[in-house]
Image (cartoon, rainbow, N blue to C red):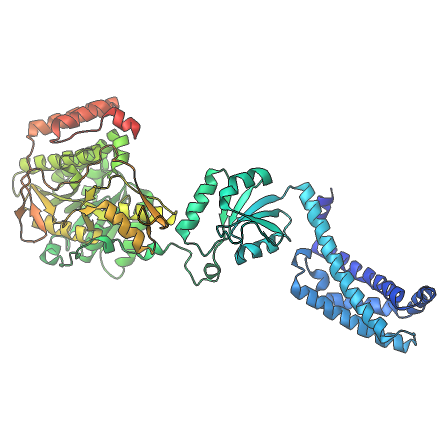
Length: 629
């Protein structure tokens, strides 16, 4: 009931109460002053004599309290500056009392007037402190406070305790600190314990929350401490450093400024597209998967070639919105039309309508499900999108009179160990089959461009490592010896456009990606680029640990770029072609028929059997291996 009364009081009501307190302190301070400075038989007579000027002193008290704003101060805001105002209040009041006493010819000494001012000051400050404790006690009895343990007994931790003691719902219980020199002593009346005793302290002291008051520690170290405490079932909150609060230190991770190309370990391909841009200039170009990492970069670079129209085909509404907004801004002031199309390449009716409505001349097919573990867990969706989406797009392109279509493929299509790679290999076989069946000059020029991992793309290792570092680690690598080929998205797309422009029909182009990169070394590079150190046996006090989790289902130790092992040079030094084997028209039809039956039946095992029969080198993880992971 008392708590509700306190909570329902308006600001004006609270100010009236504080004014009444100040007014009541005046006669109390006078009585105390007379009791101390006068003989006992003179106290009461002097109080009666003082009544002549008391109304003026009370009016002055009310005016000063309002003018100085003392009566308007919240109890929990009564700090050092408020105490100073009260001192000024008391000095003015004592001075006024001295003047009025002289005019009324009261026999009061100067020392008595000084004692009155001091008494008023003391009673005023003490009354507010007592009232604050009463209000806090009411809150604490009605709502149990949150009992907090403060990790860090330095300056920041001490300031927290001072702040919380005026807070009705937070009760600081103790400190823990890594510094052995202060363990076992009291700081601001609270004991300091070793962090090794946290579990016992939490149980003994009924701790609800832990506050990390160690802003000097690196974010990974703070995150490591927080993670350990959260495993105990505790709520953990971190206090930002002063430099973060005033804006001198960015609140976002230092890693956001590190560009993925920094980890390429070779020179980035900088050669211009040159004559290759003629293939796209003044034409209607459709890019499937336009909202993805590769698709959106294809859009940007094709836009620089000045096409007549750019058709953005994308399944994700959010991704399509983002790339459409970006390209419209880039195309301002030009006559290039930007057309967003929301839909799936597996829908023949929609694909047919889009080709007919916009008279598409060039298709860049980047739409695919590419995340290996996700496609491994959802093989039917991966095969439907990657294989039948490619077939639909390529077949409708032939019927619509499209000039050329380029499939963006992957090095994981070579002797694949996963459904994602196998689906990309089947998409290549579908494209090769259509290229053979279309007479030269009478249909699209079909071509395939195969390359490895793109640094910085969604789901790739560099953004994953950076996110793990932001959370304090560990950075996870599947195996110490895993290697991958890497390119930046800009150079990969530039070479895809170049290869697509030089295609004659049916080629599989392979991009020169340099030497394979060790993922373990890449993880170390990303950690060190953020200003942190690797924690290992040689450096047990490092910031971030690298842990090895074991190869995932469908993951290979290293990737290959060709099946045949043969590379044939082209007019560009970074683009090669490879004569990998094809399937016959009857064999491709058999593959597609088998996959359709598996999809219609929802049978994943049947789909894997079809893939295993027709994709050279495919070896899938066993059911037991998939279950373990």
